[in-house]
Image 1: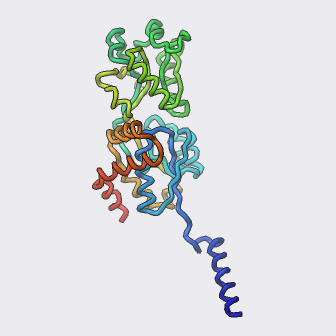
Image 2 (image 1 turned 30 degrees about the vertical axis):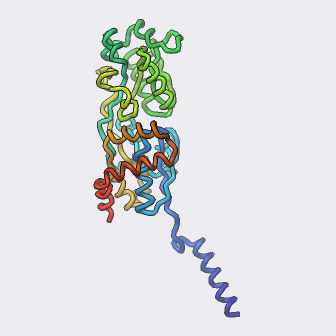
Length: 305
């Protein structure tokens, strides 16, 4: 009888630990938004490693379009996004300003805008966006032969796609050109194919990116001057759900110190392109970066000790 009573009590304790909050330690999970760009990979995996190995979280990635990441963060379905580009995504920060807040600056100096090959700029005197307002120039960059010039642009789910369309309209170019939308890898392959063959091409791009390890944006291509300033120099920030920040102060503090130089992000993208983008390879590249920057990583960790 005594043994049965002890057994019954043990069962009761086990049941209570499962149903009463605080009786058993809940698994801590962090959902990181992933914008489906390898620009996001290094900071995502460094954050994953630190959160899991230093603070005991389980980290999951939620891959989706950028507006969906912001909506998910506001709803509490996504906790952190390590790759918000400002001012490109300022309208999303304003839309969800009561639910999302900045944690810290990851890097700055992100160049972006429209480019053409250097030889094309020199031969046809195309140095600024308004120079494109020439039907003959539009014909030269009509890749698909439909009579309209092509701007190789962004994934339709990225905010830069909308900005490209706005710029075409603002410069009264939308009757001569159309933006071609596509995934990052498809756009890059098309751009590199044209550059390799010395064929005319008009395209939107940005730094950092592995493209610049093959072609130089100071020699091989020209950034078109943009007097209307559609593309100011970008800063990249870590942001998080406000409730998550309050409930996870140590993790939020750690991530607020997180910084990676822009050239290192470019390096990681080139490595991923060369070695493969499977999770194991990307994590290995992140660990290599951490080992090479151990002093910086240690300083982030020291802030939460």
